[in-house]
Length: 216
Length: 252
Ligand SMILES: Nc1ncnc2c1ncn2[C@@H]1O[C@H](COP(=O)(O)OP(=O)(O)OP(=O)(O)O)[C@@H](O)[C@H]1O
Ligand SMILES: [Mg+2]
Image 1 (cartoon, rainbow over the protein chains, first blue to last red):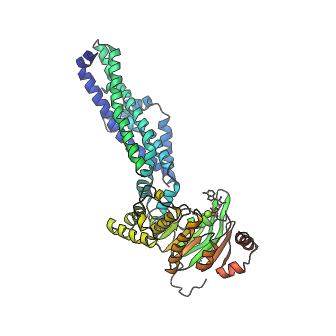
Image 2: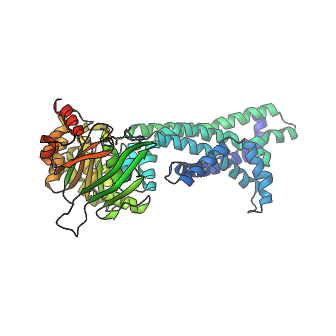
Image 3: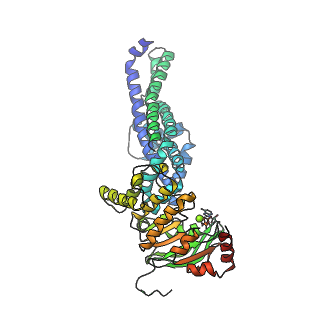
């Protein structure tokens, strides 16, 4: 078994390196975009609320592969900036995952008593100040566990990028079979690889939860 | 309404204010002026619209018709101008609403730093003075949940005062308190009255209304039914609704 891993280490290394890269870039992007969307959805401006809500409803109900197809085949025809497959894969993952991040952040915001935001506004804090210094810090505690699930799903979703000819971990097995190696053993190793990637994610969640449960 | 100093506008002026929740009218044609240094106590049965009145004055609730002015300036719509005006109007809520994730002194110093752009050290020092004034400087570094209700409400008053507001609104500040803690909060409010703060106080504390109010405003189903000095209101109410209300309250 080890032999297969050693013989094809080039494959596994680039595969998992790209997976990690996809995950990190898309994860950061989705957190930023998703939080902005959540801010739109709770803002006092009706147009922003409508746009945020529309976005979430569209992308939460669209299969990820469809979003990928758009970036793979429709995007190049739009005459926009010509970007690599890898970048387009990151964009697709951000666009899709942001909708889920938005809903998690928004429901976290809803767990914070409205009196907190009211007291803040009454003191003269702006909407942004109220959100960033009063509401979000209190919402984070209840946001961490569901957010970890969203990021977990993102990690698995990076494999869809295989259809983009991005050489990430999901692309390992087809190449293995071309090389005449055992696909089954390859898949076991990939599963172990993903398991290892999930561990730091879960560990971070535990640490954060512990830290915020005492800070009160 | 001919105050001697015609040049200075009233601190609060509501003209023909209407407010509905859905199809239910909650404020009907409210006209009210509160002059500088005046203390107005608002009385009325549950559901009369007292909280709503309080909350419209700093636009926590937008109104459907009419006009509200603070110190001669019309209340702006959303945005920075509104935030600036709100900073001049302190409000104290029934449920305290202290920021749960901040210590008491942080609660008091937060807005002066973020809104008034005071230095952190200065804001903290001013906050400590205010906490001493309301008698809870020993609680400064605790979180709100670690304080008694009376202490929390005094902290909330200190937080509002930290903005050096022109006027203070109180919405039933003692209604959520255990009886033995009511007096400590009323004492702080009384000291504000003595310092000449302009105040609008919704309360069921008749003793405070008699002692501290310049005027009593009696509300019922969204209307101001009476607006008179406390002596007159308590001894000779004109309307049947006020007589009925006082009858119920005073027999308790
Ligand atoms: N956010 C809201 N949505 C719908 N109706 C509301 C809302 N807030 C208040 N109301 C209604 O408006 C009316 C007046 O409410 P308000 O809270 O101003 O009365 P109040 O005089 O403060 O009563 P209380 O003495 O019980 O505090 C009530 O009938 C109440 O049900
Ligand atoms: Mg009320």
